[in-house]
Length: 311
Image 1 (cartoon, rainbow, N blue to C red):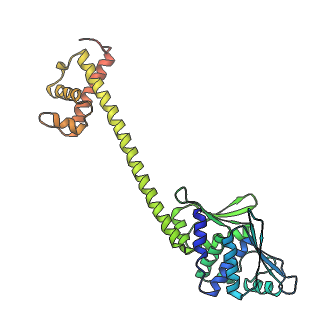
Image 2 (tube, rainbow, N blue to C red):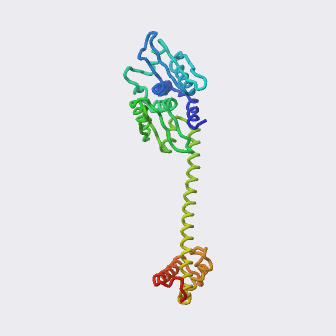
Image 3 (cartoon, rainbow, N blue to C red):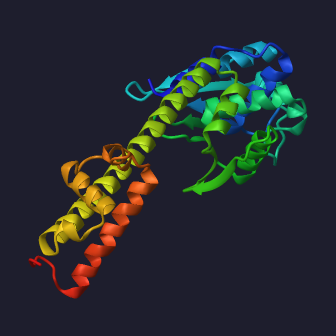
């Protein structure tokens, strides 16, 4: 089961306690997977919800029964890839349309249904159940709700952003997708939709990912430092060997000759370790200063054309 499916199952398991929130959640579902023929009375009134997700069918059926004891016919088409159809006809369809405050010419959710913050949360829940998805946080942070019209997408975006987030809309083929890509905002969304188990799972995953990233950064940094140290040590040894093989270490001052001999004896030692081998011991900066002097002498030899010659 995908992370997205787990989130929907968790949301589905909690029905809002208040009727106004039940209606708002149902309105969110209906806006993204429902249809209405515009009639509120008589035999010709029809309202239906179609989905391939059984969780959507279950939550819509439950909410319809709770908000108005509305009679719903449930049809299942197909076996391998079943499609669930919730059909409401006649006066029952009129009752459902009135409950959802449906209006001809407007396909967004009525603002009257989402005046309260709790109802805005319920709308987001319903919209996500009907047409939302969420990536496994172990791979990437991405949450989206797919809408069939720009107006619906803008309404959902505005409701989400009323909670201090920054959701955006992108066109995708014939759809408009409201999306979030920041981990913190997706955690907030899980809290808004009342999915504490998914929220904790995501937070744990984020902690593990951050720990891995921190370790990787440290390893990369240490690897780079080691490579830099080794490269510097190799050059220092080459410089000293050049001085030794061309002019001889006897041309050096006592302090530089001692430094050269210690570096040749301990080619893999760090600057701090080299300083301890000197008599008297010298700090890291002192060792670095002496090695730079040796490098300058070697460079002078190279410029004078005495590389690999006996002096």
